[in-house]
Length: 189
Image 1 (cartoon, rainbow, N blue to C red):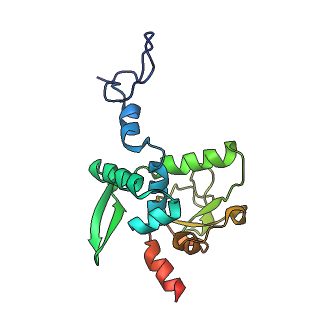
Image 2: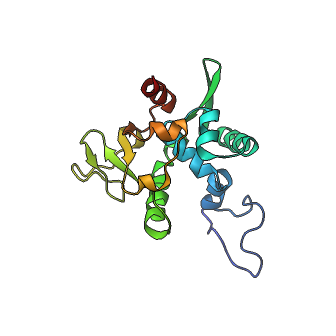
Image 3: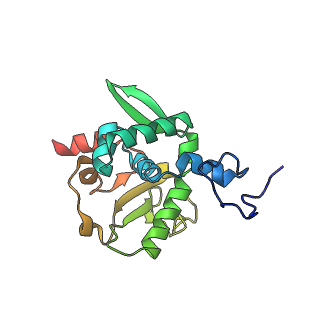
C-alpha cells in the first residue's frame, strides 16, 4: 500500500532520517540527497571514472568523496571496478536511471538561478541534433539515453574556465559515458 510522503501533524516535517517517512522520494533522498552526490553522478555521466579525476574536477575533499562513493556503491548506483591498478566507478542500471533527473535539474538551474552559466549543450548522437530542455531530440522526437548523447560547451562556457584534466577533455564534444581518462590521455599527447 502506498502512503503519502508526508502528513503534517504538528511535528517537524522531516527529522534527521527519512527511514520513517514511508515515501519513495524520501528513500531516494537517502541515497542521492546529499549536496555532492548529484555532482559526482553528473561527472560519472560525463565519463569521469577515477577517484583522482572526480576529486580534482569537483574540488571536493578526499573524505567527502570517499563517503559519497561508498554510499553510492552500497546503494547499487555505482560499481567499483579495478582497471590496471586504478579503481574506477561506473554507473549501474540504477545510476543510469538517474539521468533524466540530473538533466532536468541542470536545465532548471540554467533557467532559474543567477550568476554565470557555463552551459552545456546535449546533442542526440544518432541525429547530430540538439535536444530540447525536456531532453527530446528536435529532429526525430525521441528522448535519447545518456549513451546516445554528445555533450559540448555552450554559450557562457568561457565564463568559468577550469584547467583540470576533466575540464580540458570536456572542452571538445564528448560522447556521454565514454571514459574521460581515455579522451584526456589521447588528446594530451
